[in-house]
Image (cartoon, rainbow, N blue to C red; front, side):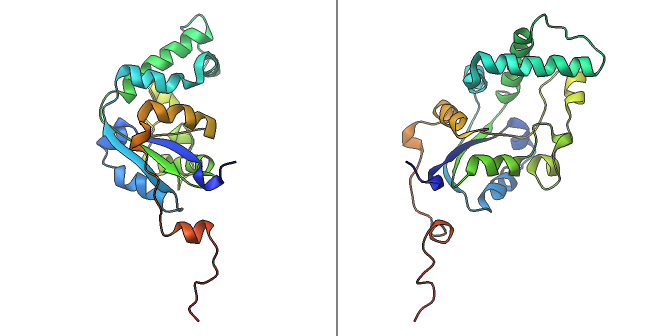
Amino acid sequence: MAHPKEEQSLVIVKPDGVQRTLIGEIIKRYEQPGFKLVAMKLLVPTSEQAKAHYMTGGEEWLEMVGTKAAAAYEKKGLKSPYATPRENGMAILEANAKYLSSGPVVAMIWQGAHVVEIARKITGATEPRSSEMGTIRGDFVIDSYMMADTDNRSIRNLIHASGAPEEAAQEIPIWFDEKEIYNYRLVNEEILYGDMDGILSV
């Protein structure tokens, strides 16, 4: 069984994060708790790559996001323009892929104990309006589902961060070849995970 310190998460600074010159600030937020950056690249995703990224959840993801979107229409007293949750999910897939492939992104793999769970906390809620202050989205974004729906676009929330270790394992090969992922030692890993004996000289 792998040690928890070997857990990995995919994090992507989306085109709006790059355009707003927040790359360094975002990297700092994940680096500060002690996570190790093991891969990073700047690229413009293809539409196919972006769709593959969102479709790691398969048909279940399409149904889930379509159902949530239909419920949001109802909450506003509106009827969904789509006949089925899947059709709504497909529309969301197209919008998300268009957004993610609209310009350069920074794709990264962060590694460390409980990195998926903690990175999600650092990132904040999917809707920036609902994100707590102190999270990346809460501190740097003012977008909301209401504005995104009004403008008929994908919500701008700066970052993608894997939702579960299993999700990360599916997402990472879409963005990185094995040879692009580096296994190296950081000195501070001894403090995070190692034996503290021997720090004091005798």
